[in-house]
Amino acid sequence: MYGKGLRPLSIATVAMLALSLSLVFFYAPLDADQGFIQKIFYLHVPLAITALVGFVVGGVFAIAHLRSGDRRWDAYSYVSIHMSVIFGVAVLVTGSIWAKASWGHWWVWNEPTLVSFLIVFLLYATYYPFRYAIEDPERQARYASVFAITAGAFVPLNFLAVRMAQSLVHPRVFATTNGGLPGSMMLTFLCSLAAVGLLWLTLVKFELTAKSASGQVKRLRRALDAPAPGAGSRIAPEVS
Amino acid sequence: MTPSRAAFAAILGKDLRAELRTLQSLPAMALFAVTSFVIFRFGLDRTSLSGSLAAGVLWATLLFAAVLGINRLFVAEREEGGFDAIRLAPIDRSVLFAAKAAALLVYLLALELIAVPVFALFFLDSAAALGPLAAVLVLTDLGLAATGTLISSMAVNSRARDLLVPLVLLPLAVPLMIAATGATEPLMALGGPGYHRFGTWLAVLALYDLIFGLVGYAVFDFLLED
Image (cartoon, rainbow over all chains, first blue to last red; front, top):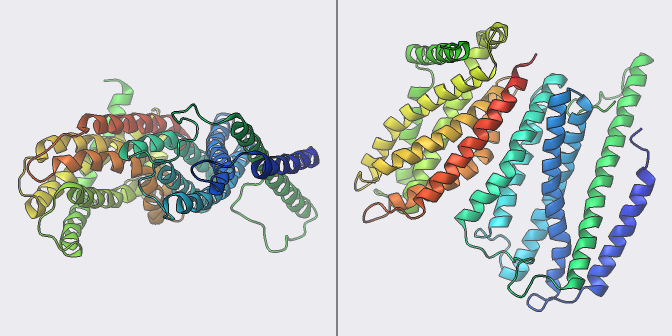
């Protein structure tokens, strides 16, 4: 039942990605200071925004799970965080490439946004060992939700603390003295943001569909009293 | 006394009495801290420390020593059936969170009562920084007590108990450590304590304490349902 609407959503995502990439390479002007490398901004920043929003969305689903006791919300929370962690790897890689190109180093410690993101990423990376260490599925879902809520509260606090500790060398693309982005760059950026956001949504939906299908297969097998080949994952939540 | 307050006092008293009689956590934490100082003495090859180096050594040691105590915070409750007793008792479950956090706070303060003077004796030229440092210690301990209690109560019910506490707690404690070292660094500067951004860092610590105190209080109920 999660498969419904998956095809149009996928087509929209591919079209939006194609549109935004062609805007990035053929429409958006070259940056006066940084030249061609600045174009990674159209990938790096939307990925970072989507990942952070995904973490917070995972926390909101976790609240819904604790309030209603419906395990489906826990599966949503798990998939949101899972996808955001994958996007987080891409954020760190693209950020590193950009740092090398514009500051000459692969990693810049006095760069608050990059460092904050690393800390948030490290915290969410512990979501998996944390989740896998709890055997009882019902308790696992509850504890994972508590983790997701705590980590969701941690994200803004961490950005505040790291920013206060360091100087500001991150390119403040939206708040430069001469009035922010020119219109063509802003349009390209918004298109990229929409494309990456759609990509996240599509991947989340795909994972939920796959989980729900494998859950159904397992249930059917159990109904037929046939042993499942190589017993399924006891880690990830099942979707009914 | 209200029933909640009576339950709080009873659980806290039980914990402190058990610790006094068995001495399971505190001596280990203190010994760990002092040994770490000795290792830093040789690792850094310095006989006296100041500024950011002093703040870093002190807080890294205190954080790791705290992890030892946090690991053991709920072990007795699980092994001796304390969780079941709390579930049976007609009290608010959040009381357990508050009492356990208070017990952890007492452990951390006791640890610092031993470790910080030893640190000053080993590495600092003057003890002038210790007075204002007390405020930083108390605010940081409050934050560690809140997150530590939350993580410990979850980790104790998992297979990888001793592994999970450091794994999850260290990234959670990063903002706490940023603010604590930020406030401590000028205090231990060469040539007398300075107060550069001292108030700001204390405010960050207080904000952390408030947020995680509230989060812990709000979600702790769900950790005891079974």
